[in-house]
Image (cartoon, rainbow, N blue to C red):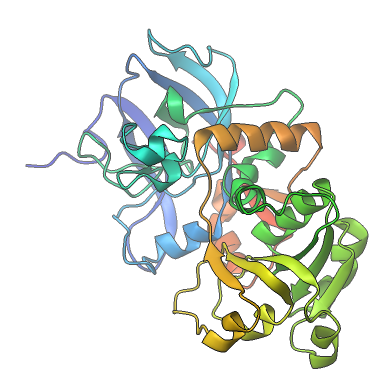
Length: 360
């Protein structure tokens, strides 16, 4: 007979979980494994609320194991390390992102691309190597193999920095991999939410001219005056879109709702790329002639490997690329999820886990 989440491991843990497709989160007692020789245990202090969490608590991607404790933008302080841990010590600030395991043997792992390992283990709602299901950062403690733990830069606040562990790497990685990190390039960013606002900040740090493409005119002032975008285009305005046709070296598309691709392809220069980092539920229509006439490419990217994640965190700290966050307590999470569904946040909710669980 399978053990309950509360008894399957020796270390008591507490968090908030969704039990069914309603997605409603509530208090949840469970357990964590004992700190192994290469494990790091840390007290969770903050956890970002990713749009993926909203999909997962409702099982919209068909991959959720209930009960689900979400959260993969996790920051905190080390409380215990295994005997063979070399990366961090007790008292160090650390983070954990989207995944906590991989095979460590395949070509992807050998090339520091653990995020593309076919045996990658997600930080929550995924089978771990011991057969139990992983639980994420909406909880008081985490235990992870040191390889999947990020060292935290000294000058980066733990609350503000948490979203970098997913939203940050998800936008940084494609800019770097596809060569869109060169000064003087013209980069388009579609959507101005948790991913989009960081895509703007990273692209500007690389020295690009940035054009934000949005459906919301109300975001124009924020995009230009606060985030530093150079241009702002309303995607539903044919005249504004026409003014940008053929001018962009690349586009990072962060939108997770179903939307038209052809108008975006028209904005690219020949031989340029549209890179998807949002994950719409329904398949996108891809018109062949929009690609053929200009040898344009549609591609995609998902997070990054551990080496690149550390590089990104250090780059963000050095260049003071702070995500814009709204800090909340755990008892507000269901309201936050409703607001996230309506894009009513600038630009990332971050749960103050340490404060939330002091009196639990």
